Length: 260
Ligand SMILES: Nc1ncnc2c1ncn2[C@@H]1O[C@H](COP(=O)(O)OP(=O)(O)OP(=O)(O)O)[C@@H](O)[C@H]1O
Ligand SMILES: Cc1ncc(CO)c(N)n1
Image (cartoon, rainbow, N blue to C red):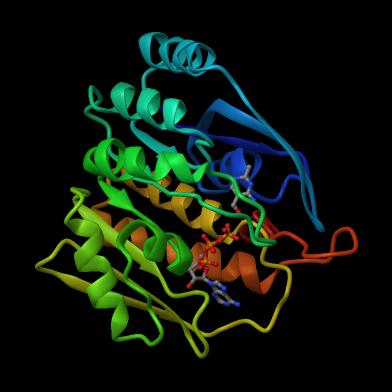
């Protein structure tokens, strides 16, 4: 039987990020992907043209439908848009035994807001405490903790500040630094540095969603957190190397690179 993995995230009409990226990643990594849609974005390679969140009731109902009948072996969260949705999702996840990967999505690659600033306190106080792994990029960790990362060494301080909010593991993504693409995974005692060559490819839409979903897929298959993160890093690095032009702006990573 395939492990079941659930994404709780926003829809990206362009297919490169959000729920669409998550489900493609899950297919590519051999798990059964399911979705709780939190918001719908009108989005393409040029940016986000509009965003509409669902009522918390609709999010809760989708979650119950999936969990009560089908069951989940891992959950990933992405765009949650507003404080009421963050609170509703955190409350649902507080009750699950499945590992939870929280990608605290703040803004899109083009700088469009995907989370209300009024929701940051709920992310800190309700969502991060239920995370098995939290995977912020540098902007997100700065917003959540106040720690600005300018060089690789600063990743340690950012991770420490994030862990203070309660996730079991912090995976700080240094993808926006110059040089190699270096991420730090730590639980406060173990440190795992993940290093990959930077691909000089502008078509990187969806990297963060893809990495977090791949971590969830690995956890659902029974890997440990460090094993799942290493496997996910390899997968996303290959997907970035194969990223392709789509539309006039930033194209998506290639979720199917391993299947070809
Ligand atoms: N040009 C690149 N070459 C290789 N790896 C990269 C590159 N850019 C990012 N990465 C890696 O991709 C993963 C995702 O990191 P990134 O910082 O891009 O996430 P993100 O900003 O949340 O993505 P997005 O919001 O666009 O979905 C990390 O493992 C990072 O190191
Ligand atoms: C719906 C959605 N979720 C996440 C991201 C992060 O890149 C995005 N651009 N769109």
